[in-house]
Image (cartoon, rainbow, N blue to C red; front, side):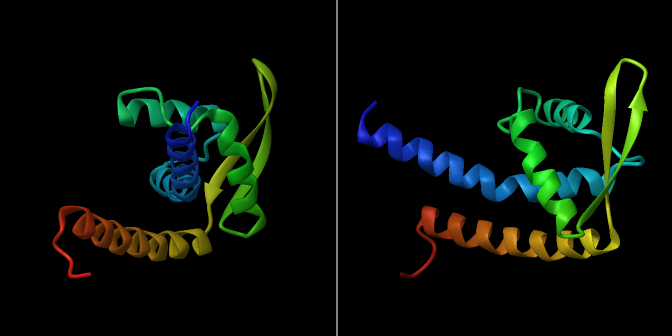
Length: 122
């Protein structure tokens, strides 16, 4: 693998890690009921029409981090088809955070799009 491929993979990883939390909050804010990790992964596949860029295993550390910061809450419930499942839901603080993060995302997206299109004076 050459330096260009390494740099591209690093950029993709950093970009993904910065968007996973926003995507999770958005999905959970629209969910009628709490969701567990596999459900979230399936939802991502359905919404994107393809296998998600975010792997199921990569979601769990973000879910735990969001819960630790009070943005999500979770409950463990028994499962008839396997081990107990941890169901996540967004908190009031999480909904407020989502509003702020969406604003940040939109302004960042608009700025980057402008630069990439050459519409911004440098």
